[in-house]
Length: 253
Ligand code: ADP
Ligand code: MG
Ligand code: MG
Image (tube, rainbow, N blue to C red; front, side):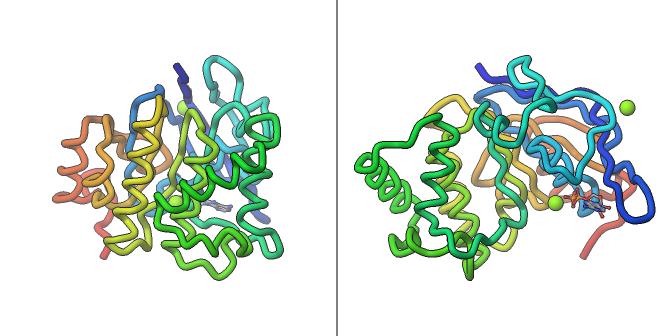
């Protein structure tokens, strides 16, 4: 059973002028089979947490620890983190011109699985996963994320999730920019993946609407670079009606 354990994590970013602390002591444990919603206002550090876990070079861990099944994640390269079973779907997916989606997925699967998937198997696997997510088969030959709409990028991420089968999946604002139909398709994809095995999910979101489709076991409120409150899914309902005001955050439009 996979366990991601984050202890007293402090993360800084260095800009031209100075080093700025963004995360100030995050404690969070996610076990396989659990879904944790991380909710919080813009700028509270939610994406920074996901980048630090993924190993983005811009985000320096100044103290604290991240382990996966007791292994030190911070000692791992980005590739090693993926092989260990960590998956990050980014809030702003990058475009990779000239690399087709099918090549990209096969390369990623090869890296994570340690060997290239057999081509005939693979083609079938991708086709099935794409059709489950209502992705037009023509997308397989398109450049990664190039000219994709917001909804298409998010579906593509869930496609990666179902093909790479991580132990811990971090979904950063997978719901943003999705219309109702796309939100349902993406949520169904995540739920299907959750049902397929024991996965731990960290679902980062600003809004509660995705939580009507993907039920969290735990809800954590993020403010000022730390978790300020944790609870069950009823906490999301409370946030829906009250917003983040009680955490000292001004209500946004
Ligand atoms: P959230 O995802 O909750 O909206 P972020 O993690 O994106 O929050 O950002 C938290 C804070 O850190 C913000 O004030 C943001 O401006 C700052 N920040 C994040 N990334 C960088 C960066 N690469 N360089 C400078 N500041 C950053
Ligand atoms: Mg601290
Ligand atoms: Mg963010």
